[in-house]
Amino acid sequence: MKKGKNSNKPEFLFGKKNYQIMLIGIAVIALGFILMSGGGSEDPNVFNPDIYSWRRIRLAPTLVIIGLGIEIYAILVNPKKQ
Image (cartoon, rainbow, N blue to C red):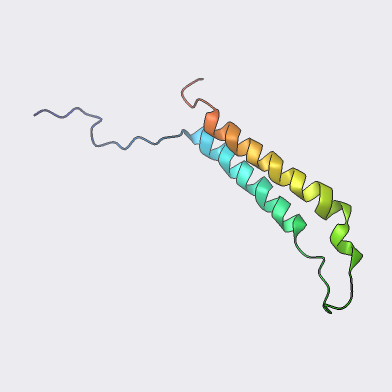
């Protein structure tokens, strides 16, 4: 039983480019969730209208969806293609 030169070298599922794109996607998703947080009220009997701000209703969910799209692209990109 003969082993080749590359038999001990681990082979990753994705290339370096894929992982870089995935990190960008994770950062965009995290930014979306950070922008979505807050806006609550200290007193539960008082309504805070900041919960419905443009940042929390439009911008943050859009960033999360864009981040998920980036993640899908990172998975589908072919790392061997130069």
